[in-house]
Image (cartoon, rainbow, N blue to C red; front, side, top):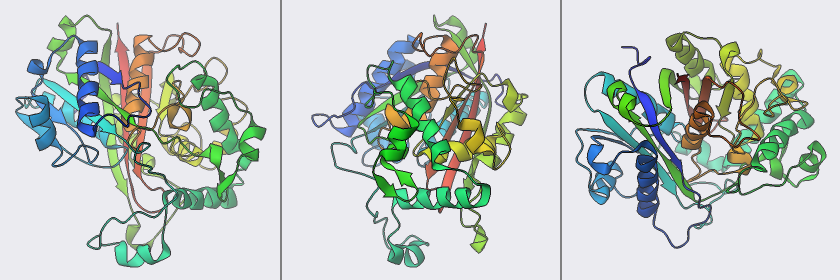
Length: 389
């Protein structure tokens, strides 16, 4: 069953808080839900489907449905890390098309900044994980796993640190216009290259921010979207994938976007060249470059040249990306930035982005999420949306 035109994103909200020591995770989820519902012009009583992932407290959907006082007939707690919330949009559209629910609420929230979380320490996922005995002795950490991919890309394709730095430069040009962004100063390529080395070849400014906060989305059936007083954002296509170790045939040169992207484009009936704006998951600069290649915006190995010289800056380059500042400058709530990618794409399609970064005639947008680690295993989700006149 295709979801093309079967559901619309009618509400979107990004929590303005970047550090919330005085709030619980459940409270942040609730505040995000309220914001998205108010944006859509709906209430909790209208919601009959709820979607969340591993950032939700306790038993996840069970706790949050009770906490929010929802009465639902469809629940989904699929967890693919930071890409989960794009998967949720797709699954919500599928559920709506199948008649399982009419209005779906998707929430994300977390407090990693208040709790001192970072990507520079090894995580203990538990002894029962199948990969734990083989990988834990080497103490892999988030930044190392991405640095390994960056080093491989440099070796294989000649990508340079200067080219990666342009991704951060573009994000900073956009973040200066976002009053809620954690890092609002515009940086140069030299600034990035002169920042502290964290894990060779990734420097401090190649890495995303760590923030509290969250976001929420409302997905509804077409009849409901038609009567709401909001610009209509139609879901055209979606794809999802998981890339792992491939039975020992490890290849660090591509990401799951190489699988999820073509699925989404085929369902939407469009090509990468049709996209006016792209929200690309940016946990690190290399994450962006890899996904742009794998989504087909440029050929494999040409990502370095594609992102250089301001090509990702709105109003300057060919492909405006992450006009809110993205995870590199604005917000990476709960260390899971997928939902913010959809939120900014919705803003662009509605014409509600900051005037300095609003893409002219933005009628087709893409959001891309990655969850997990490019260097080991990760989920990937691609979402294509259209502004309906």
